[in-house]
Image (cartoon, rainbow, N blue to C red; front, top):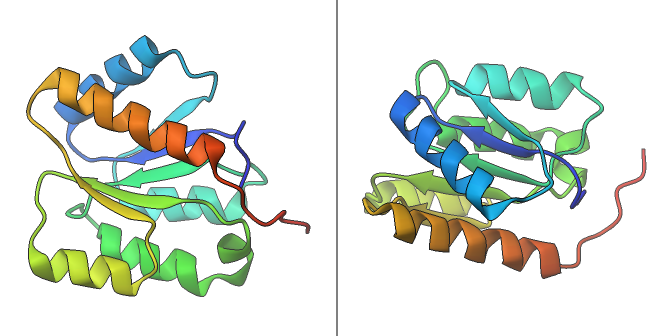
Length: 141
């Protein structure tokens, strides 16, 4: 895990992107924030870049490639899997089927987006603090 790498946010809702931009700006993390509006663009970036992200926050319901399908493709790709990039779902819904599917794909967390800005900020801070403190295997190409 590259703790200095960018934080990837896969979110197709522009209002949610704006809110998350404000939250990360207020929290003042040094990591670059990179948004993708669909899973296919995110997968292309992750597959063909040398950049090693710190964390991936993903919505579940997205056009072209759902969050669940994206996670499956990342998990099936040995190179991406060995990078130990934490993959978290941050979604407005938490249907039991989605939660079960997500954990069967070895995600590292499933969080429901609160409606209150302060609560979103608190959850993001908690998640990032946890992963900053976490130890992971070193990835060597």
